[in-house]
Length: 201
Ligand SMILES: [Zn+2]
Image (cartoon, rainbow, N blue to C red):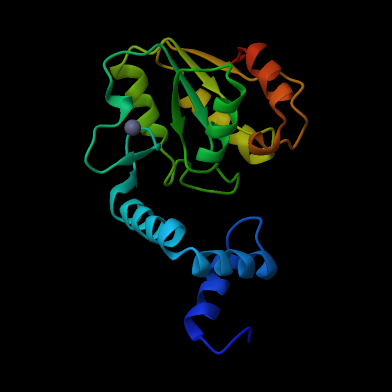
């Protein structure tokens, strides 16, 4: 990529092209904007990125993002519901519908059906701890309608069997193979609203 003879600029274009939704063409426009707005955009951007890089981590208890220096909201004394999602993007789309204002649990992925150690890296035992510790009344499984998402939901259901928590699942009517992140607000809203208890087998 020889846009110009400044290596740093080519490097920046390459990095920005890796961001979702951006190709080389829009990356170049962004880089130009940054170069032409050093004080207004570039300086605060650099500072904010440095802060995020240094201070933002994943909470080991709930999987959400938190600042290193503050307690995560999952350590609040009491809450009744936990909505379990695969990733942060899924949480954001559910939040966006406005139907659920409770706590989340972010697994950080799904169980691959071929995986031998089921909760390898996923925060499933952390979920059980939260349910027990906070006397949670309902766990809402909001994993995707994909094979991996459903396998994961099943596994969690099984793991929570010995707790008294009510487990519910988004309503049928989610399109098969539908990933939460890409559902429209309306579909997600009604799937959430019409959620029902899971039937254990
Ligand atoms: Zn947390």
